[in-house]
Image 1 (cartoon, helix red, strand yellow):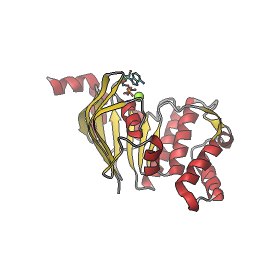
Image 2: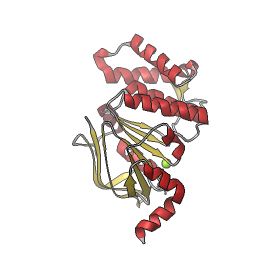
Image 3: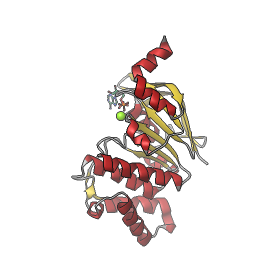
Length: 249
Ligand code: ADP
Ligand code: MG
């Protein structure tokens, strides 16, 4: 049982407040969806949880099982079991997917690391994700399409087996078939692990596959409304602005 807790968080970039007194708690076994218009701080939230040093925490705490994360490096956070699937995964020339995955898994598993087991696990997950096995031996994301990059993030998630998973617009750039595959693979991981998931999206269609327990609307760096999955329908019908106006009038 793990908990990621974000408490009274104020985050700035270039002296501009992006997250403004933000609060959220995610526990093992819970799926939270954060939805909101562009530019409201969704990616900022994911990056600040992971320790991107471009974002300055002015106030507040990020806690994982009561351990303060604020001053930990990104790799220290990853080792604790926090994973971020990026909105725009970068490519890294000269480092193959295979090298990267082997190194990461070796660090994670230490003396228990077993190369044959990893190879089997990679092959199985490539099949599940309908990824071409060639991709494993190419430089990370090099020449990958948007959809292939997203699948590669999910491959990393399934191998690293994190306890808190943050997926930043994992649905963007995916065709309908890939969306289904990615959605089903995330659900499969969730059902077979004790993980908590934070799903950032602004498309309802991903939620056909990944069913959130909690839905939050973020606007201007703050959660303006939370609810169960029925909130998705309300967003679809009314739009973010109308919901915002209802609350603030
Ligand atoms: P979202 O993911 O909700 O679309 P972001 O968190 O990416 O929004 O961005 C929130 C705001 O912060 C935007 O106004 C964006 O321009 C600004 N911002 C994010 N990252 C940077 C950055 N590295 N430099 C300057 N401004 C940034
Ligand atoms: Mg974003």
